[in-house]
Amino acid sequence: MRASRSSSASLPLLGAAAAFALAVVLVLGGPGSADGSGLRVYDVTRADATATRIPARAAASWCGTAAQEDRRPNVLSGHPVHWIYALPADGADRFAPFADAMQTDAEAIDVWWRREDPTRTPRNDLAPFPCGSQLDISMVRFPQSGGDLAGGGRFGLMAAGIQAAGFRSSLTKYVVYYDGPVSDDRVCGQGGSDRSGFGLAVVYAQACTGVSTAVVAAHELLHTFGAVSSSAPSECEGEGSAHVCDDARDLMYPFIDTAPLDARLLDVGRNDYYGNGGGTDTRNAPWLIHLDGQVPLALAVTGPGSVAADLPGLECSQSCTTAWNAGTRLALAATPRAGARFVRWGGACGGVVTCTVTLGRSGPVTALFAPATFRLTVRVAGQGSVRSGRAGITCRPRCASAFLSHVPLRITASPARGWRFRSWTGVCRGTRPVCTVAMTRAGQARAVFVRVRR
Image (cartoon, rainbow, N blue to C red; front, side):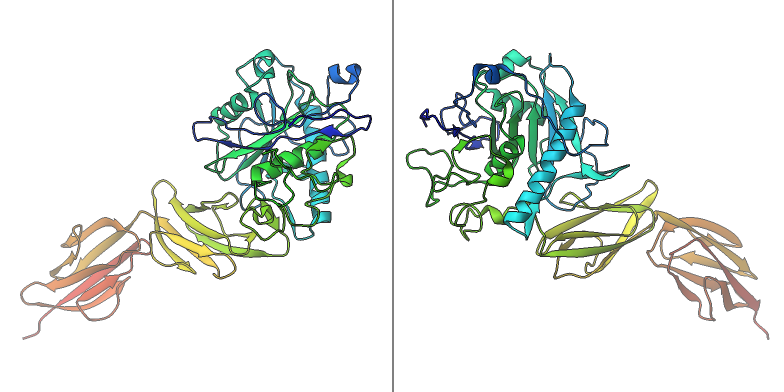
């Protein structure tokens, strides 16, 4: 769209949702930006437009350390929103002040979202640090210079760069604070998702002096959730920009000013993109925590192994309990340590292959691991022999072999001529010549034969 200049402080706005293909070919549409959609700010002074913007007045202090990868496991279970500080190849590293500001913005968005909808808030990817759980902030340095990333097409280059750095999960939305120049410093951010679900919400931190980065981040994050669809009743006419034009206070309005996040509203009237009950209702986005519908999954792990889910947030090598949105469907995978094997599932799951549970409808789950084999030692007293149903034991008078753990093993005592089997001792008991050993631990069995009296 073409923004009109007025004497007011209203500024034309945030990037429309991108729809980029699997090959990261972007198909963007929005208000007047060279590479699609951008949050544009007008009526700023030249001094403001040329100032280098470092997020300032951070109310929170981030106490973690910069990481080049996503720390695992996530503190919160489910589809995450992961935050990244990014800069060009020739950019100065200013991670520390940005990390504080990003933490501050994340906390502000959380408080604002709960105000607008007490049952929802974004599921930010958190990591445990000395001061408690805070954003798991990663750092990416793009291979391109600031000049190469300043112009049109930068969103596509950044998407490719973020994925090349290992941040490519279709389960995750990535909020990126880019600390580099843009050719139009009235473009404040862009956001969108591809067909796989991979989504990118970019805040251009050196642009748009005076505009709240929390507003930009929240707006672009909603674009990654799918807001606003072309069928929304209040979508700006003729724009194709994925914005609403019914109320200037709406977070997805196509103009922004310097008002703080507290002055914004989340889908005025609840009829366009949030809580509207339609197929594009971003209130149902899996990247939101359902504060009114959290249910636990209790997992008991026994033995040398670990269990992970197909969604982030569950990677347990010992018994653990995690919380999820009710109705979440999880596929659990069991991984034994070296020299061990997975034996079986129990509780809400059964069998030895897959475990799928629907949270809120399924109960606790157990996973049993054991050493791959246990050793069975057999001794013979008197004249006779002992053989195993599987190859390994042929005793006369003593032998031992390793057998697959937790797979019952049948052994049979056979007396020599003139002798009879009397009894077992050890892991086998009784007077019957056939014994089944559970093989749940290493053990010894002794077969006793005595002469036949004439």
